Image (tube, rainbow, N blue to C red; front, side, top):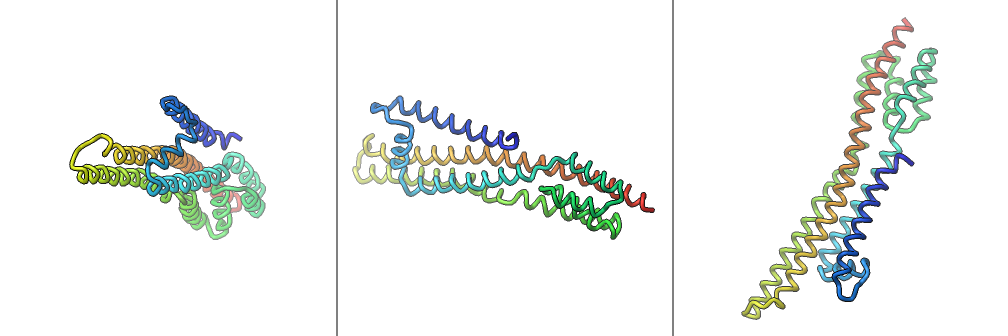
Length: 244
């Protein structure tokens, strides 16, 4: 449960903030509409074309973020425990047993260990190069999906700003057609402009929080991978010397 505490906490904070914001906005409404009804109203008032696109960015971005968080938490390995098991097998001269320990362990660190142990018979230099190469492969897998999440973070406010521009154009068209500036003529266009901007920024903020958590999680796993790789090379060198 500790692995999932941080993302669940982020989701809870976002939910509470959204609920509080909806409640405050609802209090200002004469009809005292509920938060969900208020969101629906603003979604429709903001223009379904751009609001739908912003909503799609939110849904897809959250899907990518949740998938990455689950994968990264599952990829987290107790490195010290794995090192002790591998070291114990190598001290016994059981190279295949050490490989089986790595096979039975989930995560990128175990995959790197297995790759190094598999190339051990070809020499310590070959094993070290194999560990480095496998580390690059595992890092690429950890970062999978991040470009898409970055895209949705950038795209949501852009779509909101585009809705803003189009809303302002509509307001000025109304002024031009009427030949006079009246608040009732421009209010609709300005409202659309403000709503699309607000929703785009809210989506970007939510996804940015998830993005930063994912990046910090990847950095933590990569640091563990590097430290574990150094320790493994030391173990392999000691194993090689013991065998003469």
